[in-house]
Amino acid sequence: MGLKHPDPTNATVKDLYANAYRCAAPSCKRPLYRVDGETGVRTP
Image: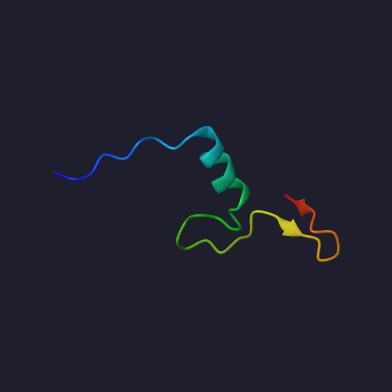
């Protein structure tokens, strides 16, 4: 029998989405947003 892990908190889910850089599908290499090299601002 495997381990039962607790569900992630809302903060964890938000952190994971905030740090995603590209589509999660294995065949998709499309970025989720662009990052401005000077300001670091993310644009969808």
